[in-house]
Amino acid sequence: MTTLTLFTEMPSAPGTDDLLIVVRGHRPATQGSKRKGRAGQLIDDNVRLKPWREAVKTAAIEAWVCVYAEMRGQHDYSAGRRSPRLCCPPPFAGPIAVGITFTCRASQADTARARRGGMTWPSTKDSGDLDKLQRAAFDACSDAGVWEDDARVVDVHARKVHPGSGPDSLDAPGVVIRIRRLT
Image (cartoon, rainbow, N blue to C red; front, top):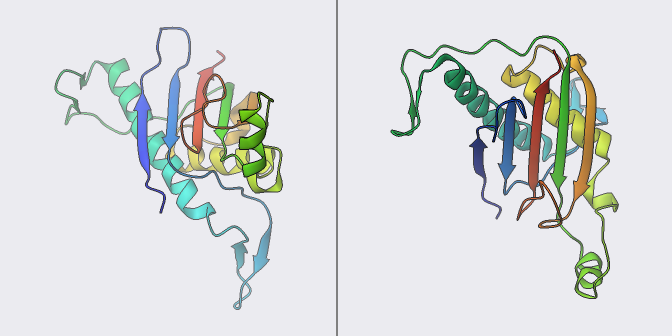
């Protein structure tokens, strides 16, 4: 059984990312087709979608509250806790750029190819469509209140990688989302 570990970090330097969201140990899920249920309601085809979106939403809220507290000087990092005076942050306004890296599990064939020194990419059906992975993550950020709507995103760099295969790849399935204001 996969365990869920959430990590949130502050941007490394001023002027780089405004928000960094990291979810580790949870396999990314696509958000795409829906089907009609018994009562005529629309149901997502992917059973992994709800827990995935909840994991991204939880990590986004934690990261956003930490960044907002830092901006307002209300975070005591030495004690590892937020000030009780902290209120919910307002969402990002204006145009936003997003870099998003999904770490997908490697198939047995990819693992064997990598051992022989070959480059592998998560391009199988098991890893999901990049646009549908992105849709699930962006909707989770909207639910978390990071931005009012993902229509604010005007610049996106999205990719899928295998564990440990480059910048922003994790050691287990998950996602790294870097958000930057453009104004």
